[in-house]
Length: 445
Image (cartoon, rainbow, N blue to C red; front, side, top):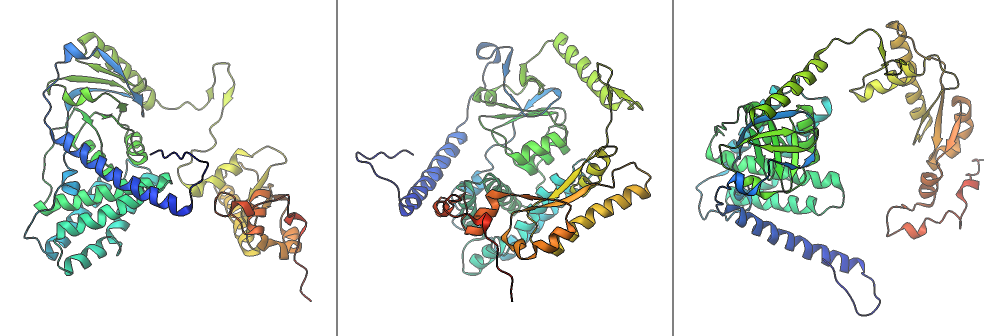
């Protein structure tokens, strides 16, 4: 939305809030219009007449895959954004049963893929479980049902409130929460029809869809799909992470004609290059099959005891980090045999906090010594001075820390109480006007 004035003017905070409200309402209207357009049936598109032998998309993952096209039901959003039933006959017990079914479905998917997903990806489902238990989410739905609102209407009302709230946030992480809420809400609504027993004939196929939720990815992979094409939009970070973790080729292609391809169309994905081939001949399929076998053999080969680059320089892998708790071990191993290595902890606020951080280093040294792994146990451990709370105990810090570094940006904003990234108070962040670096609280008598 663009608004222009004839005279020089500026928006107040009230104007900004009003514009955000208007944009939110327009976004809802546009989303409804898109939904209605998606409901219109589209005739199958003759492949040979309108599409070339291949098209270029945006690569999100790696790998190759070939299979028959599969276009899943894209009208699931109608459960959340369609008209409310006048009288569904459902009660609070039906709502609770639908929530329980949704929880069990997610647990089943999480357990099924537990060994294939890294710890960071499993946190996506932890967040889903937390939302399902949130009193402001499902708890509020129960309150509305108790007040006489239909269960389906209660779900929609609460879900759309949080979807609008999160989707209008400038923070990318909060925008991702809108997708989580939408995913969960549609699952709950679909479970009002009983256990979700919908069978997808997806084994060996390539899925073409306009949008997929994280739980959709797991369900499709469990059904045996080979690859994914998302049409007309970007993949959310959750979907991208899942596809990469599960090693499913994923391509984004801004070509709506893909949604109208005949059901017998064979697709070949080269996710490394972002290419999508239509009805490839036998020679092309064999070429990519050979390439896939070669890539698989490389992945399954046993690593040699020594690895060299093309110019015969030795390459040594010291650590393969999957958990944050392993970072300290990796740093100590990488520092082995090197001199003048310094390890600095940021945002230290107290003596106890620094002692705790330093103890982590000592614990890592102990663990590596017990395992007989070469490491550097003579690192200089220091801290960054960024919080004013450390000034009154600097003498003691000087006895404990091997060195200091001053983080001037954070130190000044915390000393002045002015967030330099917040436009409402950023004008108070003036380091040249006041010099907090020269100030230190006087000792208590």
